[in-house]
Length: 347
Image (tube, rainbow, N blue to C red; front, side, top):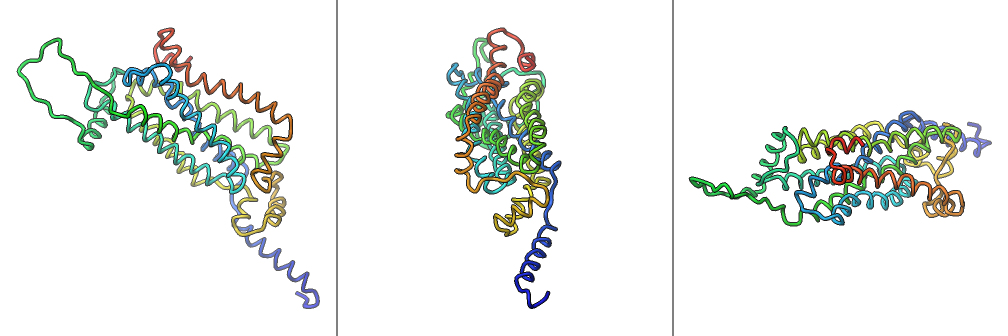
């Protein structure tokens, strides 16, 4: 460049560096919507973690109504709290890593529930949940042997007809399930992280359509899980069903990690661009929505608008009602009206 114009030359070099960095920018709005929907859908299934199987757990653990309520609510409670924390974190660092972390924790929680189910059915008579329990029996016996939990019995020539084997649940089983439910509930927090993931990829004029599509698909996850899970429980049993569930979450995590990309702004920030530089370049790519300077500033700005509180109340009653009914309806239909668990899930 002309040595008489050092400022212009510096600007040219700076522009060239930005263009070179932008060549490594990946992803697209369609891919952002697809990946966020997949990740959040798998995490939101945890809303129905215990509801469809509660009639079995109540019989195994001799649970009262309050204990059953705490168990059903455990993933929902932790997910509700984590939404605020991880939603704010995603605004600062992008959505991909927080959502991946939430899915990892959710998968660990479901695997923990599956392991606890194997302990409940090991070394004693299983709850009659269906004709096909061979897979669960083999798996639970394998776990029982690995943990040295099978007790030796002495053979007798005859067993009186009145003699029955009483299978007591493992010590601390309820506490363990409650803890794993809280951990699995982290998957529910993917909903707020995914909203930001989708919103930053699309222009303002498309926000209603894409967020409606995202929310509609993701919020169907608990209902579909409640519909399908009783049939799988009847066919495979408690242990295998929850191990398969956890494996599906892991599979969704692997696919998400393979295809998910943060919006252009966060990618540029990750490549060393300053806040203003990244924003300017992202606008050239077409990004119109950007995070606030910090999470507290964004929350304060939202809280200062009265419409935010109106929508919060609406969300509290509609989505909160959906979550509550999804967890409690299977138990209600089965215990109050005596319908089969598979029918209760459909209702």
